[in-house]
Image (cartoon, rainbow, N blue to C red):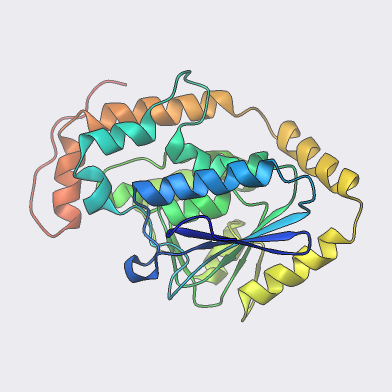
Length: 266
């Protein structure tokens, strides 16, 4: 079964295989990709026979992040990503990460190549992350004068100290797998992360689905609420997008010069 030209969804017994399928653009996130991931999550939530989900990426990279040229060229597209009815709800940008947390079954991300920005945010929504030894990871949004606003903050809060998470978000540091494992960003390293993920999926599918669902729900709820984090992500990002410094950061990331303006009030 195929969801769209951006995401392929297939089944192997009780395991759903979700593959990001835009390899010519290194699986960069444009509006159709956001919508396709969101649609796949909605479909999986309705599947009562589902036991485990495995996410992977087609081509040389898991996901190189936001397709900045495509999304940021249209203010309307940026608004579509950030719009939400209530502040504590997840918008479209956040759902592609938070949606995996909200599935009642384990979600495993098989990572390889670049896992940057929005790609890392998607991976952080998974319960387990298994990476190829040469995977490159980064909270890349800072390079473009943005904050990570796709819900990955929830996972960072759970898995690492605040100072380390802030450093990653502020510096846009690129990490190898050894550094990512040290920080707790990934669960393990494997030469074939997709096979390792599928092996783990088989192991988990042999356990009681009631117990597995209860463990995920217990640990997610016990590590704190989501609403305030999602509301702050969206509010701060909209303030940033309304200012001049984000556009200057974008020019700098593309190799152009620019002087930052005085910081606004928060």
